[in-house]
Figure (tube, rainbow, N blue to C red):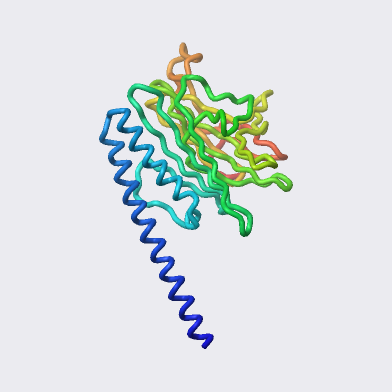
Length: 274
């Protein structure tokens, strides 16, 4: 009798997984078609309507039981990253418009405690000419807008927060790369920034690198407690005040986490982790 019950449980679990996979495949197919339409249609009103459909699908997906165990494959322009502790997932994309500011859409899915539902944060931001400030925190209400492409958890005493790496396509002249800190207040409110990044005599809440829109800048984790990035220099010596003229040089700088703070170090050798 026990063996029969065990077989039934296995069959039901297998059926449930197969059904869930089929549903996710349908969602993936629908999203892929919508993003393809976004790429090929240039009317802003139509693009906004298509994007609204994408948001409805993502809204439903983020509250599903499979969100942490599933990843959409082959969907261009949809960012999906998950923390190594499996407690945070970020889904993000941007909407490019012709006659108004481009928009960022970002979902932070925070895994709920045992037996509790996941917590979903839905954020919307806009491209802006205004620089992202490094001397303050941001909240869900005034989020600056970015696409996050990597993250790592870091524990400080009994608190876990996340180092985020992101990019903001600021305007037609400037791109921005961002190192930020994601944390949570005791009431669960999401918060961006921590007075943690020491460069010279200044301690910043985040670091932001601005460079020419047609350029490329590398910014990545070198280890769990080291972030390496291209050293930016003005293309012309007479354009030091114009960030849109900055580009990557053939050298690297870093932030290393030591004694409870991220310390800036110039001209590092990336060939040697020590």
